[in-house]
Length: 259
Ligand SMILES: [Fe+2]
Image (cartoon, rainbow, N blue to C red; front, side, top):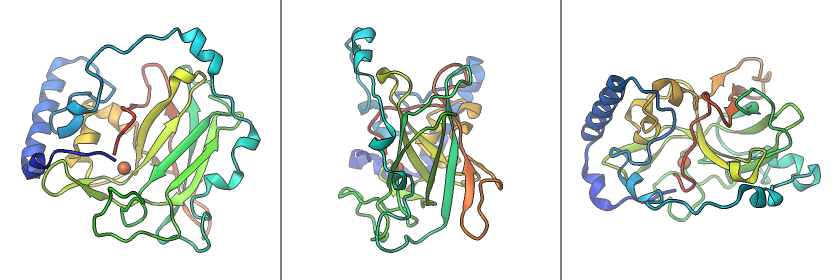
């Protein structure tokens, strides 16, 4: 979730889209690949307020890694990866399975690490006091899940396809449907936050958060693929999304407190 100042909500989508297009043109003309989200990305109005302006305090990585997270199978219940069974009834919406592998830059599996997700319900509504737009809360859907990667680095969630939702970046601003992901790598210093999108969303071109990754190939790495082998007969549709934590094909990641 995030806040923006109310003035920025006066800008039109056309204004935002013009700014996005101008930045995209400038990026294409540089010829320098840039695969992570820009910290200061003007069409995303509050981005300037959302990152540190001073150098981070450098901690001794060896000391920090003495406290590296270690998760055992008993720490996470198997049902925590199924967001459709957390209440007495079934949530409304399209049931989906999202699965993939978490790997490092060399393609090696990141094993037994915590993957957490949070998302809006099928109507695009979060259970959060700051989300008060007029879409229904689903009493059978909290929108939070977690799991551990297996020995192959694979994870899987069963959930409900989230809906798009409005936010206050500009007038008539809508976020493409997305699922937030938090991951730990093999070291505590590798906690990463990002968002997964669903293919073919018409809001991609309009969304300044998605577009703040100015390299088209890099931002497409945040879009899951429909996978009919993951789809289950008379049960759910299936999507595959792999996450690369390091290296040149690293999945774009963001500052922690994002909408
Ligand atoms: Fe969100």
